Length: 130
View (cartoon, rainbow, N blue to C red):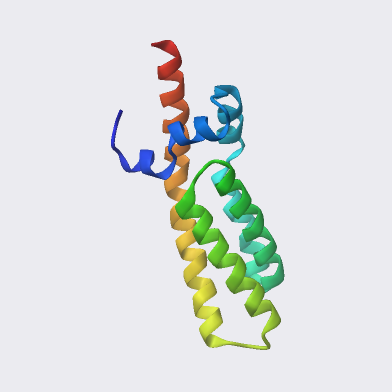
């Protein structure tokens, strides 16, 4: 097995354990991931609709957890918490900076996930052929 960073993003062996060694379910879960989902955050972010940003981050957190992407799930959770707190605050430079930082971190994690998902699917295809 390769020890590339993509393998650290998504652990196929762990996913197989979680899904009861059902490779079909693992494949389905991986194929549901779409890095473009992050783009849905842009409009509410531009409108400063932090409640909506928090809701979308919550959805991304679930998706990331579903495919075992722990770092991305943590980044989404941080964004969710910060955005919800900012939505409840009248104004906060600190929270604004925290949410912007969390957005950046989540984007970075999701960009790493796109090739990791492809690699995980290829790894699974290779294991079935052998």
